Length: 70
Length: 167
Image 1 (cartoon, rainbow over the protein chains, first blue to last red):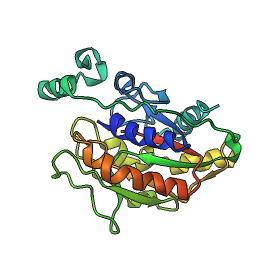
Image 2: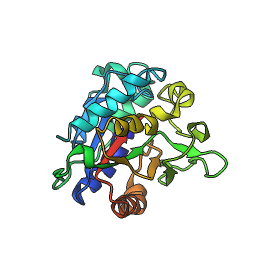
Image 3: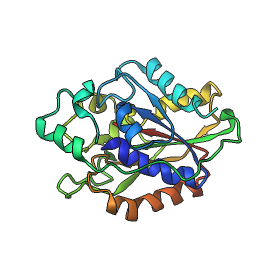
């Protein structure tokens, strides 16, 4: 349900002019709910930024998600 | 209907959960219109919305797992929070909580965004972020009571970019 919960907030924010981007663990759900903008990651549920000990990779995911806005 | 049985990341779910996800009436989250970012990223103020159910231990209430349909409240997390004070109260048992518990920043990536500010990739991090609990199966109260207050907070803070981190 997380993708839908954040998707609903994302929709409301886009409609008031705030640019948004999201991490996507399950692309099929984001396609189903027509989520506006998301960065797909290959990780399992509970690990949106991958290995909790890999700080550099976590930064890279955040960067790539934000980069979608350009 | 969602083809849950062909989603490998759902292979560990119980039959009951899979069936529930298959027939669930998913909401349409497509915005009627969308914002075009006119500032460069290096000039943008970025906030995070996390659905990991994080709260500040000792200062905020946990998200209540007993609320039918899911706890629709939200928490405001200050940007200068110490990660050790963030605790997970997400009610779903369908995912491994060990990652978030060992490193809460993977649900609310403040340190990671700080690095992006230092690298001048983004301009600034907002002074506060939003934490929600994503397992909301009945989103009516969330839509009516929480989304607009969250949006107003972000507008007042002049947030340019929102990074959503679902769990």
